[in-house]
Amino acid sequence: MAHANVMDKIVSLAKRRGFVFQSSEIYGGLGSVWDYGPLGVELKKNLKERWWRSMVYQRDDIEGVDAAILMHPKVWEASGHVSGFTDPLVDCKQCKHRFRADDPRLKGTPGEPDAQCPDCGTKGTLTAPRLFNLMFKTFIGPVEEQAAVVYLRPETAQGIYVNYLNVLQSSRQKIPFGIAQIGKAFRNEITPGNFTFRTREFEQMEMQFFVKPGEDERWFEEWKAARMQWHADLGITAAKLRFHPHAKDELAHYAKAAFDIEYEFPFGWQEFEGIHNRTDFDLGRHQEHSGKKLDYLDPATNTRFLPYIIETSLGADRLALVALVDAYTEEEVEGEQRVVLRFLPAIAPIKAGVFPLVKKDGMPEFATRLAADLRHHLTVFYDDGGSIGRRYRRQDEAGTPFGITVDGQTLEDQTVTVRDRDTLRQERVAADGVLAHLQARLVG
Ligand code: ATP
Image (tube, rainbow, N blue to C red; front, side, top):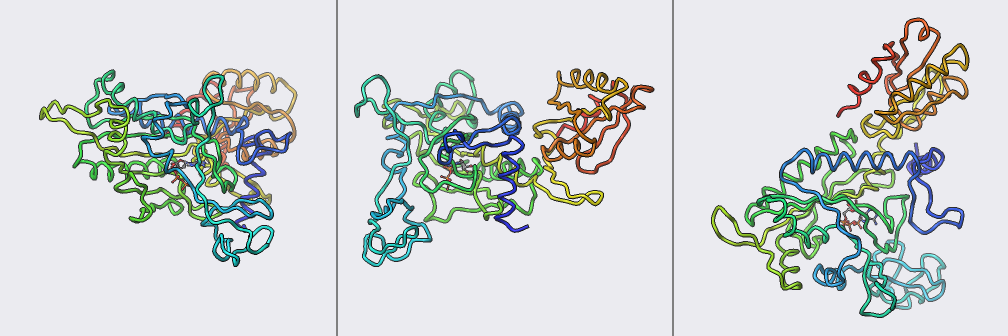
């Protein structure tokens, strides 16, 4: 499969089956903003719940928060985003198109007569690079004036830092401990693209772990390993996962060490999670800018210190894209081509399809009742339209791990067949034992 081709097929499947739609499509769409359809919303919700469970419920040293998107504008001065969250951009005065200064298609030196616009081909019309802030601005209250400017947060992390003391005091945690959050972030990206990979509105799943200075390097290693293992447990192809360490000149101003976790997309290796040792930069800056003491009194030694922070920052949309791309498989089955999404059953949007073999002899009634019972526990799709083979294929394309068929024998002995999406094996199972049968296969 040619690479561009695979991505095109995934984008078209995502639309056709209701995973992802272009935002405001009937108006021609909005650049790099996407909506999740019925299957996509389930996939992303399952991924977010899985992350939350592993961070907040399965550990006793991490607490959850849900901070507001709008924050005091001084937060973004303290964080460095007002002055530093910028990309250098080049404009073409002829065609008015904008490019990142590091766009490999730019030829010559922007601002000089030799530079050539990659889009319209005119020479000498590119401006010298100018800094462009990636934060979306809006106004709070009725007056649109400088004093009323607020930003849509470009990362969720700051909502954790400014609540660090509140959480520490209310939860009675002791260092080392972490705070986790899932929420929207906004960046006015200049070179968005590659479907949902780089969007202007996205969700992050971030965890900030507060540690004693000196113990930061050990915790950094621990979180690096834990995060990679988490993706492996999700069933992502091991050969398509790797770490990318940031070289000294790549490191953000706040970071002592940073590793990306990258996935090999059809368009190349790209980051989808970052693990950063942010030192005491964030709490130090917020202490300075707010005038509030944020240091920690260590009860063991009765000394005070400003905690270091190890951050794990994962994009929920990028993870959903990784899951979708990694699951996409084309294969030949019984002489026919099939497209199947091999999601880990636990994250599949629909867990089971329920099918009466034919639309008569009481089969639809039995199957409808079974589907209604299962719906109390699982996402289920009832389908009685078309040949059974076609109905299986439709669920294969949605990534549904199990197909339950009610047939002639069901009416005699109350058993149904359960078809496995991946092995295509069919087992006969008592109808009243189907739920337990599926649940045993949905763990993990
Ligand atoms: P990039 O280099 O791709 O712009 P970044 O290094 O700025 O990313 P971080 O600020 O570390 O990214 O953000 C952490 C995570 O948030 C990323 O690994 C990614 O999963 C997600 N993320 C960041 N920007 C976007 C975006 N524009 N669209 C979708 N997800 C994003």
